Image (cartoon, rainbow, N blue to C red; front, side, top):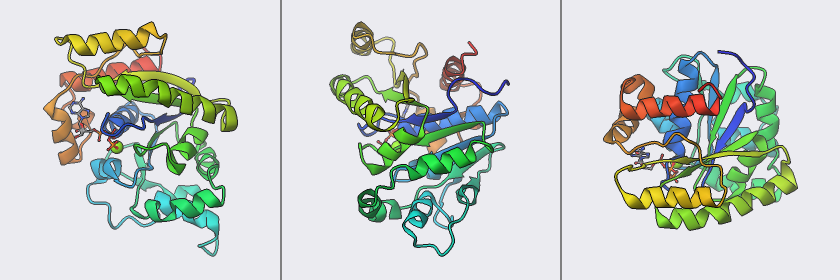
Length: 263
Ligand SMILES: Nc1ncnc2c1ncn2[C@@H]1O[C@H](COP(=O)(O)OP(=O)(O)OP(=O)(O)O)[C@@H](O)[C@H]1O
Ligand SMILES: [Mg+2]
């Protein structure tokens, strides 16, 4: 596949919990890797769902993303290069910067010392090594999601087809636009990803129509709901490896192609 499409570093963000951020980050990154692109996924959520999804129990991973941030406040004698915080996964071409519960403990100190740009510096350093970088974020507009939005070229917003999501999305876009203006003028809203879409029910379609009526960039490929997703999380195997021919996997492949402008 050709390198150099428009967006190399993508953040998946929605401050609402449980909308599919981790599921979407992992599955798009796994397809990217499967297609031969050297792909890094950064897990910025203390919950560590993405890390668990990719490598199972990650308790013995040294040099997590929390350590990367910590070394910027001088707690290490000599700062290590960003690549030292990157770990292999069982999947070819797919690499992980793992989460760690310590992210919660160091957040305040990092924020008070203005370390919000440190992730951008690290990912810029890694841009020579990786073809694609996906960043998974916590369900809050906090220090880490801001650092991710500063580091990224584009933002993908999962939308889980419930009424509350629809109201929250305008607020979310306001936050993203403010951050873009203040810290990352290059950041683009690449699109809203409709997740757990049920084509048979009326409400999801009317919610999606409502977003489109507001001129919001809803991506064409919608993801349906399937128990395979939960199975995939518990098996620590992204869908492209667990069930390559499944309908949901195919939708993820179409979404990937849409984002890479291959379809
Ligand atoms: N398309 C789907 N079909 C079925 N289940 C899904 C789908 N997408 C996500 N889920 C399930 O919904 C739950 C929440 O998904 P996920 O953890 O990806 O969301 P999140 O936005 O990362 O959550 P959090 O805000 O807690 O980080 C998980 O149990 C996941 O398995
Ligand atoms: Mg998550």
